[in-house]
Amino acid sequence: MENKDFNVADLFEVKISPSIDKGKISLRTSGEFEFIGRSRVNNGIQGYTNKLSYEPNKSKTFSVSQVGTIVAQFRQKRWYSSQNIFILSVKHDTEIINNWLYILSSLNKALQRFDGGYSNYPTKSSLSNLQLTLPIKSDGTIAFDYMEAYIKELEAERIKELEAYLVATGLDDYVLSDEEEKLINNFKSDNVKWGEFNMTDIFTVTNTHTILKNDIIPNSGDFPYITAGEGDNAVLTYISYDQNKLEKGNSIMIGGKTMVITYQPSKYFSNDSHNLSLVMKKNTNRDKLTQLFLVTALKTSLGSKYEWGNSISNKKIQSDIVMLPINSDRLPDYQLMNEYIKVLQKIIIKAVVEWKDRQIKATKDIVTKDK
Image (cartoon, rainbow, N blue to C red; front, side, top):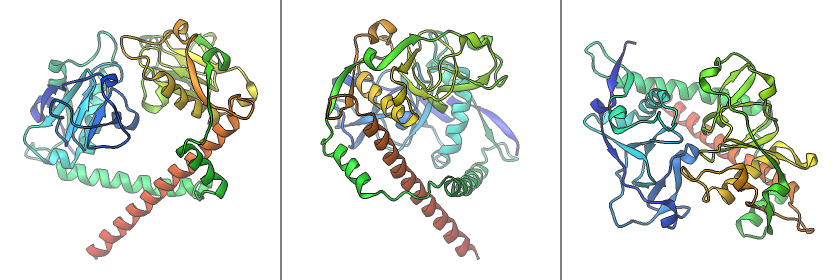
């Protein structure tokens, strides 16, 4: 299949989204209008809001964040946003909307030229002139039929791989026990007791080393090269480098400029000394599932405090607190944290399996109709 480059402005009208500070509105867990931030997590959705004093952005559009995490996302619903986010509205061909998954992939690939730094971020002009590589027919028009077939083929392959993985790992057993149901209900009904803890009582906090992107050779080794980005658990590539600059594994890293918080299972290299390494002080509680809970607890406790322009630092975090579940001794209940993540894994796997079963049924229905 032949490809052709198209400027973003050939396909979309590019505008800057009207913005409002997240702290100035009351966000909910559901609602008519999405509130979008500069994040990959949950497709950028920070929460939901009622209609504000101005009109929301239209649905069936694309959003592109300008600073921090540079990412394009598709908007199924009408939406509002925080600062530094572009709107891409389709100009003519509605088939772009019908094939948004393929278009989105091409758009995000093109956006990789920007790293979100102080001098390398998309402007309205550079975004408009950004080139997307798309398949074309013999007459030079976009091959939307090829896009649709390609995405369906990928879905079928992934579903087959997913089935094999679930069986091999035993994750196809996702039924919750009575105790697990009780644990979930305790969290939902606020029957879990919480306490405030100084960050420095839980973690040893240090700044990471700085290893510039220009100084590495991508895919040159076995150690992950971690940035402050959110995709792929912040892993940009795997490299070989001076091992004296390795950071401790089985730890949590906070992106100093972006507040992206990730659990890092193994030793890693860091791109920026503004990033923070958090190592739990008690070795007996330093397991993966507990730290995954702590990642979410840190995002909840610190996420609204720090943002672009007011970044976290080792000095600032020394006086911060984190809210954690507590046991009868009013100490952090690490066992409860661990068990809660296990239950969440089961719930997520159940949703994935049920989606997989629906997709397989739909495929079989199509095949039956075609016969």
